[in-house]
Image (cartoon, rainbow, N blue to C red):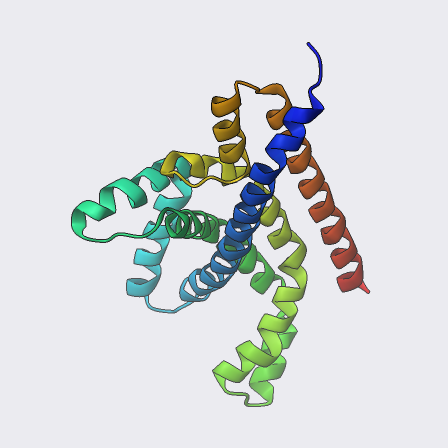
Length: 216
């Protein structure tokens, strides 16, 4: 077997397009999962069990269901009920919703890690509940959980190839498309493998730098 650099050159336009889609999915999915995860975490602290119970059931169901099944459901089942999204939007929603149930637990741990004295100080100062959360609790909790949230960004990156099942052509999807047309598999798949390694490694370096900065 010989390495064909011409195949690599021919594949690069496919690769850059797939990379753009992959990064778009990861960025939007992360934004959705971080935002929705915080909403879940706050709702789980509401005193009323009529709020906590449905949220707990929904998040547990989503967390215990494979992402692949959720992708199929959102893309192929919802249209039968009149709810239709583009393939890319469906992928972003599926990944964001799936990982929000994990980021919820990260936020929960971060909130619980805030010293009790901070709650007592806010009460002693007669701060409104909203002010207590926005000015005292959440800033400290978010500082603690940012590194853990970053780990889920890497996990989302590694799960993007699943979007092929709903016709989203991210990096691996583009490699598959090129391989089927050219009958060359080694070069495009190797390029994709290296790309995932590089992206994951760069993300891990960024997380370490961010963690060191937050610890100061």
